[in-house]
Length: 244
Image (tube, rainbow, N blue to C red; front, top):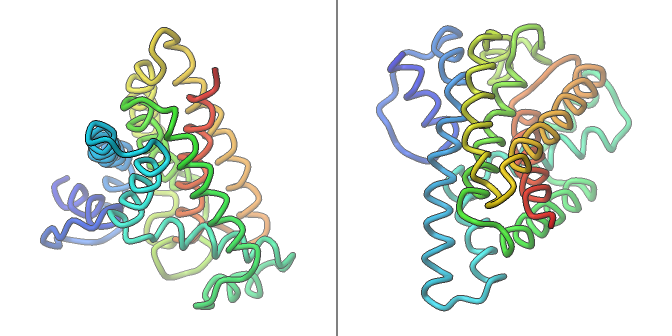
């Protein structure tokens, strides 16, 4: 259990914890507790955002710095995964040819547009988001990891992060993670407790759709697909919780 928590923290954040045992059993724990790590990351970002606003920072500046801090605290891995996944999907290639595009170090036009749009939308939404909306969005993003790693979703490659974590999360752990994020989401929109859980549900529905497409095009999930799922869930959750 402890090794799994360490793996979750070191995989999903920049915190330099001492490495423990790394195998599929620890990966199952790590991917199961990912929503909790996301909520803690969201708390840190919500605190930063509130602190910047209290210091007199303009709303858009505070929001942009918060999004940038989120990327720094995760090494930018999820944004990188988003760009690589969108480039591969935009190529209209399948199987090994698409996976080869994802491995290239450069970013194509589809990836650039996806990155710019994601950062822009997240920053704009944060100007209208309260602290619990931030926590909810980042927790939902990591719940997307649990969804992507649930039993029955295959890896696209025989090696790499996707192969280690694919099909490791049992339904009971996924249900527990969803209940946790749903509980947090009740406080996302003051006066409308239904809106936060609805935002999480909608974001996860979109994640399931993109996962089905990834399995059809790539043969399964990769680490890049996990990153794309994270950013998609965070962005959609922020958009829905800020609707008035």
